[in-house]
Length: 100
Image 1 (cartoon, helix red, strand yellow):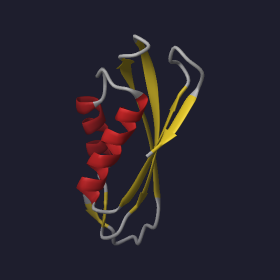
Image 2 (cartoon, rainbow, N blue to C red; image 1 turned 180 degrees about the horizontal axis):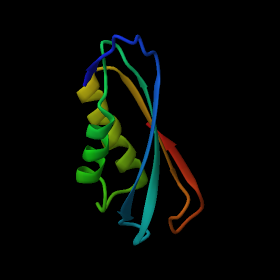
Image 3 (tube, helix red, strand yellow; image 1 turned 60 degrees about the vertical axis):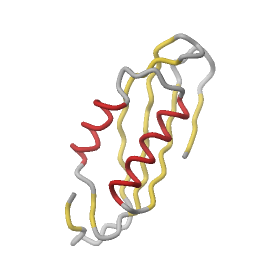
Image 4 (cartoon, rainbow, N blue to C red; image 1 turned 45 degrees about the vertical axis):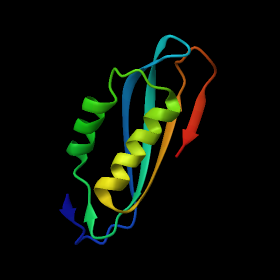
């Protein structure tokens, strides 16, 4: 993490990863939009990329679980307000957007 000497008020970070749905028995793509309201520190975006690759990519998770896990990890790491919007349009059902 970096010192927020820039006085950044809002960060919008986007990333995607593939998961497997245990209900629909299909792979799908999570398209995350993360909104961070930093206080004293700002995140290292490479660390977020690495965490997603290690903990979410290829895992068997519902859309809601993937979004929740990312949001919980970020809140713990950053100690600030974080929301995660997850848009999925290639699952075995219609397009779904969840926000946690």
